[in-house]
Length: 259
Image (cartoon, rainbow, N blue to C red; front, side):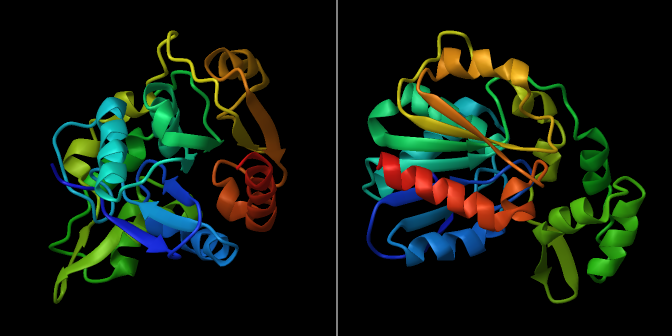
């Protein structure tokens, strides 16, 4: 069984596993990881399957992504972990908490609820799948090709962090785009009604994001009766990057009270 790739910051303290969002990677969280390791956490920046430097596989479901994290914990002899998941990573964290509560001390979910989401990455996935690496020689070339499908420059910058040199003069993507371009429905799947976890947990929302609505509060508390909620002002879906100082402060203070 292949084990997820990670970068670990710190060599002692409580283990904090960070799970990135769809089309992201653990490296997106390096600044926060360094900061948390500086105050006593051992931080694991994990690349989920078909992302970053982790293994590629044709199957892509939350059940499998959850088992990947369980296998990772076994391979690193981890228990009583803290999990922080953003977007898709937040859904993985929810599944982990409901199905493997014995592993987890507490968890934080960033800007995602347990509900089902309609697919909303279609144009992005088409654009990434059509990148022609026979013609792309640098990041600018890739950006120009992707502009046809993704107009927002900040989103393109985030996506193009997945570029890497396959060999000299040849770029590629660290994403298994052939699988991920068909994963829109899987990523949007909600939790089944019987999935319930009574651990204390925190759900964070970006004030300008519509991923968590007021109407989702009932559903969050159905699955997670001890959930607390907090809104990060001046931020959207990438709340950890758009208001990083407050995000770090809120998560840190919450963890210090609950671990």
